[in-house]
Image 1 (cartoon, rainbow, N blue to C red):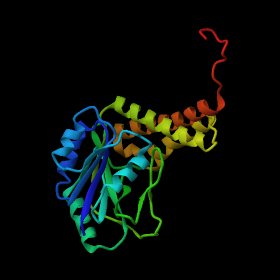
Image 2 (cartoon, rainbow, N blue to C red):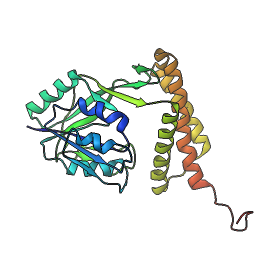
Image 3 (spheres, rainbow, N blue to C red):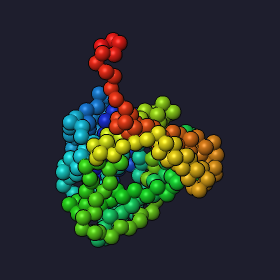
Length: 259
């Protein structure tokens, strides 16, 4: 049984080398770039000859499907450039692949954010389905928050060892990423005929804060936990506000000043 580590990337020069260093043990490394303008592809080619570029961006789900199609190995390990496979997780992955039993495996993800690892707030163990047999599972077409589909009803098993996730470089990076996800979420909902409201945004935003900070013990993460709960509430509100603007407001009339 062989394993391919698969990444979709764009402008990840600051993360990619450290990520790929933790994947040298894989039988195959596949990197699909979405049109980077930094040295991402050069770095990737230091580790693998399977580096392709497809800048026709149609969302995270479609890009992951394209990367899956490049794989020749029996198993796929989907990794993001801002993640690192710990030795304990590597051993757990190799043991699962060696067993060869068709299954989807989830990895516990431990995120570093604003100066510390976040072990509460609903962020840990943030189990993500990333290890699966090629051809037996695959990603959906979602623009964002894509999910691994399990059409054959494979068993889902949990691996041991953390996948380290270095989420945000700084506050600006968080806000930019959050705005991107909010836009993609609103686009998807609007395309399905959904409508948003500011009141829904307020309710969901407040619920997000209470859930993260109180119910999921974000207060145990200290100041980082408080900041994350506030920012997550803002991001939740922004999603619904974006949808409301798209579906409930009108463009300026043609005779408006300046037209």
